[in-house]
Length: 113
Length: 267
Length: 166
Image (cartoon, rainbow over all chains, first blue to last red; front, side, top):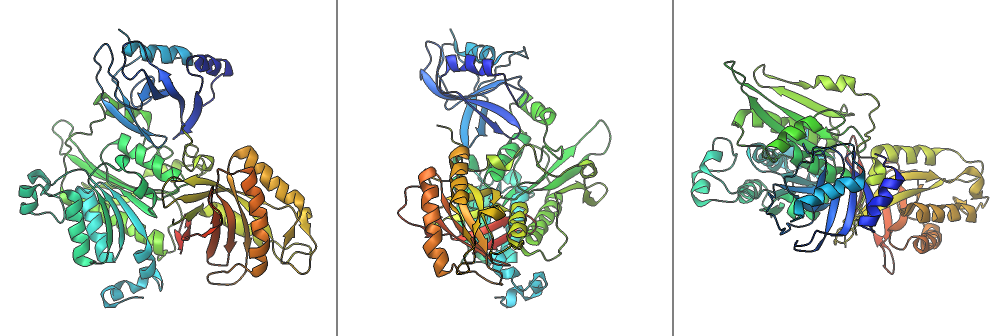
């Protein structure tokens, strides 16, 4: 799936090393050492953003390990994507047709105070 | 070389037994379906196995887990050890690399395989396994059964056997995997649940899968030339090509193009 | 280290069809297969062949002492593809006989020079040489960082049927 260059540039502002991948017809954005909101441990993780529908969610943020965050979250999912194992919380964003950076911001909201 | 034991399967071809013995087969899931597959592969003479299952035998498995017995349930024998026992009992020199864990936790041995049998639960699991098989150019034979109960009607029991061949239509292409079924599973947090399971449909599905594998390796029938998606209807007693196959167009897969094979460079 | 190659049967058929075409003066044809590494960090890496680039007719050198000799343009284009796509490359040709083929002394002397150029263009990829017969294949593989080639443990043709050449 193609995403506009300007949206990818916006994503790069949040994570300079962002790279786009495809697997099984789904587009993922790899976010190496993504900075998490204050109060999270670890403070940075490798993450994978799926900005489109994935297993019943409108979008999904996968992270390389379970994160301790200010608000306790339900870590319901382990997934293997791009030959790595990922974890994800149960966090549904009702909006669709968001810009990539908006999607990421709304996903990260789950880990804020 | 064909010794006396395999003389009755010499019709598979002059070099068939050698190919069978050289092939490395992977099995993910050694439950009702996988245990049947293992037994048949061992009888056929397969010698090289990479097998995965994190579970131990429980009493509730004994209605269908081929090779397991009461002692296994009492002692909590690992399913990989049941499979190893079945294989070694027929082929003592078989190499059986068993992993009492999900394949996702030690994926490297699976990539070694010439052929994988996917005997897993759930659509999400199938998606992940197929992604790996496609990435490393490994044919995947998937089997699964299910029982549906609707109102007061008799249960409908069925299943599928799918041969997913790299380059050819994948499970998304043939409509077996789609966002609707994945979403429904996602609503249950990916839990396929304690689904009804009995031994005889597993036997039908496993036998079909093993037959496919042997044909793929030996080409004995000289007729296996395209995607296989067999639908099993236990109520009707039939195994036949799924009707969706007639709507498949150009048989190239757009979900797993060949330029995406190999290790992804995620660093 | 046991290196195994895998090639989809459709691609394999494309290669065979191309290599079987007659050339005006060369006795054999040559092409280049693109390759990606799999399980690169393990002691059983995979070389996954995923595309084919025939050498055009006008990039052969008329050399009666050789089955097929390709010119510097062919080699430069192969190196450029390695650079552009980030893939490895395998020189491929065919000896038309049944059974396990063997590289000729000329193959073993000349082709590694081509491979060394490919390795300069793409040091992080696997490169090598593949030889087909009418019913078998063998390969020599230069893994990233290696001093020399290893003989591939086998080549699998993935399709209907599944061909395992050890």
